[in-house]
Length: 455
Figure 1 (cartoon, rainbow, N blue to C red):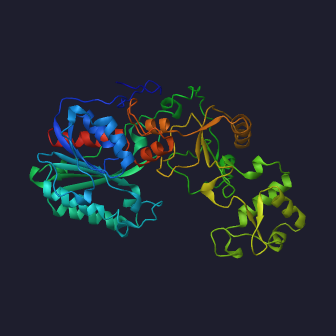
Figure 2: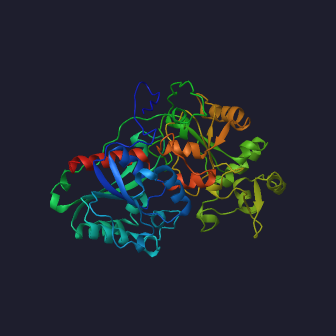
Figure 3: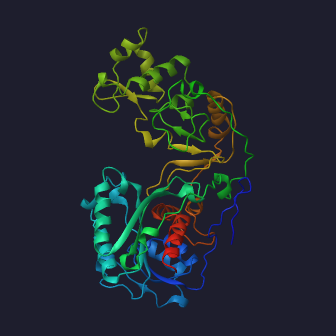
């Protein structure tokens, strides 16, 4: 079944129904999760001979979607560390090897984390079974400078057992999903097939649906062409170095971040929400500007004393600082200094970190731990940063025209089928989708592999 996104007549097909075609090849699904790899491979004509997963809730979802009397002979392999043998005549082995050891959330422990050592079980089973090829997926952190030696070790071990191996970081955004999700894909072809060097990773589709295209509960917004703005208007002359490929240097952002530690043109501060005078706003911005100065301490962010403030604002009265404490913007520290109450970036303000506009063509990465991200249900337009912020506060934030990301949203943002039966508890389902692989990326990576293998 086709899903057509309304973007200037461009179209993309996503697997909106679970489908089964005539079997062309056999595969094993390691670290199966809720079946992201399987959906893509079945669409391409694959038959799953066995799956390995240890999370009981994930197994429940996997089985209710894929296991029936039609494939009752399929093997539930269980814990990969206890698997001694895979079913014979397997063409491809796939799997999303646990990524936490290589992620920032997992504190980048790598092989020091027991989950990181599961790679050696993967290599052991591939070596014993000798499939024609494999596809493995992991977080982009595995390819970071800190972990690149570990990635090279994994590639070397796979090469040493008789495979030609290639890897690349791919982003779900480049394959028709409005999500910024970078993942390392590792593809291998058995050396005796003499075809590995022919493999090429799929190129970006250059099809970018908007957020409202993929989420049913947000009505399509009329897209007004954005006003082009100069750097001085947007950044006061200096473009922040932290901007990503999804942020243009001559347009307003498609999202608003709630943070007292940043000051971008779409940053909402607590003093934008709480009634404050222009002078109070100036005092807040003074702390924001100077708190990272090494003059006041070695931390990434340092509180300032009254005397510190006086050196910057000579006519400052201490009661002005205390009034900001009373308003819930500043707090006293143990050493009688002043710091923002909202002093941790990702915690946001009032339990909101980010609100994405429905006209955006990119969402932040879905994670298993979740994030304080929301989606606006109405769109806005402006020709100046301050006007943009004012309209956002008036029409979206104050009127609560935004919704949390639900399991239904996560299902679509990962490219899962419309009739996929996810977990009945929304928080568990969102965690499972956060751990899942984006289906369209797997489909295109696998399609290239199958064409090389003549399957």
